[in-house]
Image (cartoon, rainbow, N blue to C red):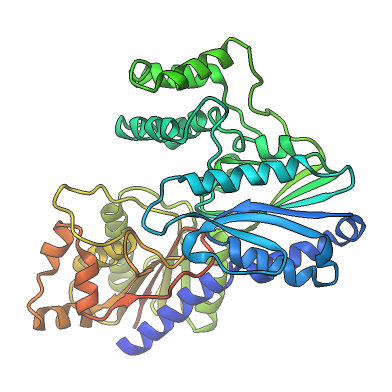
Length: 436
């Protein structure tokens, strides 16, 4: 039974990832845009994100009969660069870092120049996906990339929220916060988006280069004051924000023109629905907890384990065989002696230890982009036999969990999920199967 559950759990998780692969989603969206694309003298392709390569390939396939009119540049991770027919994939950052780079700035500036060059009847496709914010840096005049990085690090260190950090970064950017849409001079711009953010807020995904921005220059100064950073940020940054608050430069766009459209093609909810469909086909009663799961990983794992115990002991909220699904994205607060791992591997190890040697249970958690923390694994798939194998190897599972060191634990037990880059990213998907 354990091997059957493991097989089913992986099949359900794979179905979630397959449902948000960019190719079919992009091709379906372009079919709806047929008349506008057919009439356009030029079709400009812009954007950034981990799914950029697969999204561009789908665009080129769909527009094969008019590729001579296509031109573009899309910023992607350096290891995702490959030659395509008309659109250039620009390596904006190495895999080893999530911070913006000078190469990313060069790509973003070229994107802005292309958007501004659009003729009155040209159409633009903006392809946005997970990781787009770090891949799309374009500091405003007078602000260096180092200045922006310094501000971001200071905000992070003082515990600023993601909304606070985004507000400041957008007001230091020439492309985020609706600025790319503002730069476009053509007839129609359509952003095709694969969301890696809880709730799919358009102004947060890739920092909203084609979405309106509700924050203001004055709010950014209030944020710096609230965190006592006015005297610590680079002088050029403070001067720029003060000039903006005084009204000497334009605010970020508070509304987007009618010729700009943002379409969310794929998200975590879509992935969970696909997983739910396959789980039901395999004969499991399904509890879909949705795509809004956030918080520290271990308490979230404890909650999931509690539902498993309730199903097993009381048939509540359903009788086995049962499948628990959840999405979203948790966090891990690392200690100074942290080992190697990621939030998905930590989730599986924490839930596994809570359930102990409970038989006929399989636990999967994985990043839909194929990455989990600074590892080559998407996550892990484990069951009671994992603990038995670990004990035979002399591994202390609790010690590995305590030092956030799940990767070597699951590598030793051969329970890692290694997919390579999936070329999509809609946060995480968790699958727990409870057998009879």
